[in-house]
Length: 206
Ligand code: AMP
Image (cartoon, helix red, strand yellow):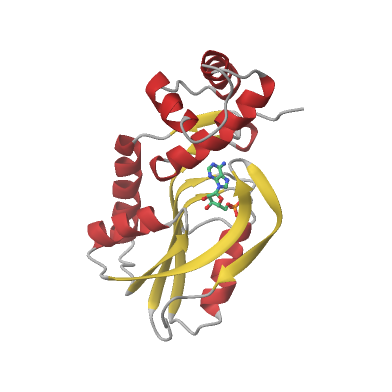
């Protein structure tokens, strides 16, 4: 049985609003960090956007792996790459796009705390309350009974490829794929985008 998740496509306008909201929360709490840690890959763009808004120039990364492909978990979460720079004595803010199970942020927090910072906080654009960790700051909550896979702009083509392949397994051909993505995932994908994906994937006859 092919599993096509309910999705929500996030726009750059929403992303901008979430970044503004987080920056405002951090500023009004007087908690501007010395170093931002982007939890890769989802947290890279959000961390860079906060770097811009907060004027924090030091940006390092840490990598957690949990979700293999779009909306499919890869077993147990693991921290696959440690901090790319030292944070001892620093006030640190870890940034990610979303806390869903919270496994990734939990691992990142443990790893960063062990590196001896003077303070560690966390910020995510979106937060689902089932998460085992509540970020210090988050811009918007997705109710736990309204779980969706969020198609962020930085994951658009990757998500589209995975979802289109899953839809092709139900009914091949671009028209059927488009219809299934609309009906089952709630995504309205422009035909040109599906054609672009189809150039290097086998999605059945057009
Ligand atoms: P998690 O460890 O489950 O909190 O999530 C790890 C990472 O997987 C997140 O930082 C996102 O990049 C991605 N992810 C998890 N759940 C979702 C979701 N519902 N929508 C979009 N991306 C997600």
